Length: 382
Image (cartoon, helix red, strand yellow):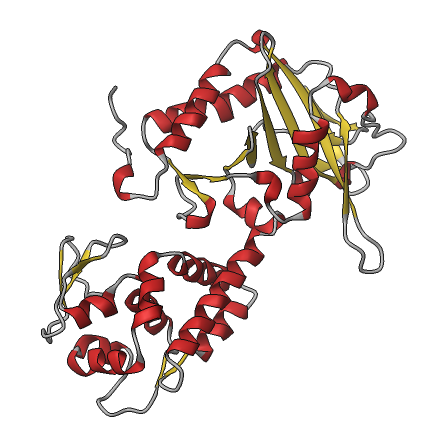
């Protein structure tokens, strides 16, 4: 099969071929005519908790007069597109805990029922226990926007696509945003009729047939990393992992390295803080990081800086300094690379180390040069 010009080198990335094939085989089963599948659609309503109480969720069946176009949209936007992306090797499928870059990544979470998050437990309780799309639908209330339900409270839409000739099904979770829930209380809607506009006196909802998460067996495949982080508690997990990493580094290098600026940056409410936390959490998951934190001491670190002028310059260290403060973003990125990419251990042991992330070769401890690099870049080691 001809590969796309945009094909990724999956062997060099955190790609799980087994999970990719599992998803590919499942989707090929649903790459069929819309008349061969049945679609059940559910609206998930978010009810604001009062006086500090937690929000609650409830779901109802959405009755669609004609779901042919929506079925085709789901098959095109989720099924066919994913098959094409996997076969052309333009996406990677990776464990969510590896925190692969969001671009061109479908993450997966095994044992979804065990994931400690109320929204996920709510969904898995329905998907795996009550069973969307099953015979229990007669016990599920029907959406009634005329007298009961508020369109503004639609938090997400759940699609269950099942084959007519077997028991296989796919459950798709799609996050809804306020701009997609068009309430007459907040908007005036007009439709075109030749050269005139006439008011549309109905609430409307935009349904695009795409996926934020896909439930298949006991696995959740995550298409929208931002949705998973913001609405399923994973952002808090990332922040905690980042904080644990900084605390462990602070303990390991206590008395010599001041990492207070790390904590300040992680604790901010900003896109930079989120991105930095992801970088820290991803670095903390590497085996090289754990080995470094178990073996490298302040004396080792001072020795490296005494002998490596480039690293000493970046960290503003002079021989004999009692402490160093890792303050700037460049210094923080450099220190993370030193700890997580094997730089410190390679410089100390004299064994050349090839960074998997950037393919940078670190020179031996005896050398006072910065690095040699295997890429076209002329940048230094870290």
